[in-house]
Length: 145
Image (cartoon, rainbow, N blue to C red):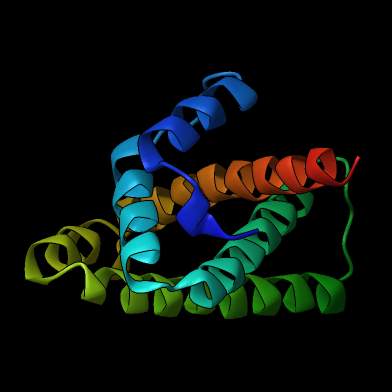
């Protein structure tokens, strides 16, 4: 999908509807979306969405109280979560730096300094990006049908 065809405001309004108003970080998604459109960062955005979706899936598995993991499997899950978290941060940094010092500082203060609050902020943004990924997949599916 070519993101330059999309109007960020319209896209995000439709995304909110698609997600049943579960998007929590609409301002940051708007900033990200505007930057990727302006600078043609579609590949970085796709990688960011993939890693965010992976984080959401891993957290869902880890948080499921019905799961009884072996220590080895839990260690693997934690390692994958760490790898994907690092990937999300790296891709977000690449994108936010293109947005200038002000945007980059907002993202640094909110997502990159790994405090407990910032980790929660980052995972909340990942949940939003998971909805973006599902919505984009839905748009592609509808376009091909």
